Amino acid sequence: MPVAVQYDRDSRPRLRATTIIGVKRDGAVALAGDGQVTFGDMILKHGARKIRTLYDGQVLAGFAGAVADALTLFGKFETQLKAWDGNLRRASVELAKEWRTDRYLRRLEAQLLVADPESLLILSGDGDVTEPDDGIVAIGSGAPYATAAAKALMANTTLDARAIVEASMIIAADLCIFTNDRFIIETVRRLDDASIAIDEVETRDDSPSIDADTPIVPGVASPPVTDEDQDDDDDDEEKERRDRRDDSGDDIDDEEDQ
Image 1: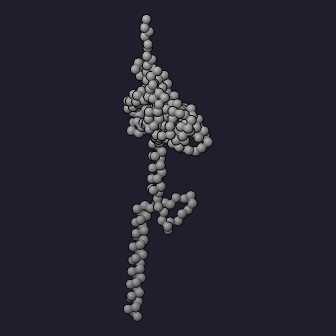
Image 2: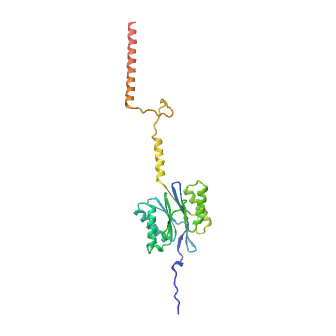
Image 3: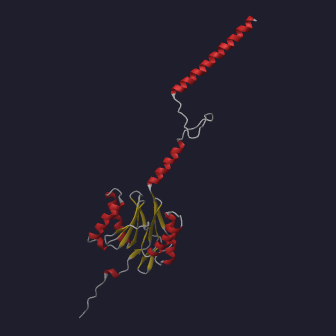
């Protein structure tokens, strides 16, 4: 009696991507990802782009796992961002709920790492939305190596977020066979920082000028010049000119009498 051979769908080789790391520090968030894509035991691509900017560049997203599944989730997540006006946390929760409950989406095999300057989150098909305590998170095969390197750099250096993710990816690429050294790095900075910087510059430019003849008393502000003060100065000058004319006229009369 012939035995039916069942083909296991999950045993087929699939396109997979690898290491993504995110770091949040000093009002900025940076995401980095390598470019390697494997198909089973074979390296299929070296320069894949696994980091994307969403919502007019205000949100960063990276993926690890099956490429086609991740692209589907990117589209779903961007739809949620638009529906919630760029609210990253709310969009992440809604996507996780849909991912968990939808019969089609729950079969997708990928993880998403999403970030803006205020939040850094991991989304998974189990319905989990996780935020790290220290502003460092990584997904993919090289995640343990990249995370350990980033934690050491965060604790012992003053490097910014972009420099930390780059250095961490270099270390992960040396240790993980599924991670290469062709990185894509994206950074988003909090808009408040730019506003503060502009305000400071404008404040310096608008500072009042001080005349060289104006006496400066420490701790005492010079009184403002009003229109009445200006009129008084004009009257004093006119009086001085009349006095000079009168004096010169008297001198001429004295000479004629002599």
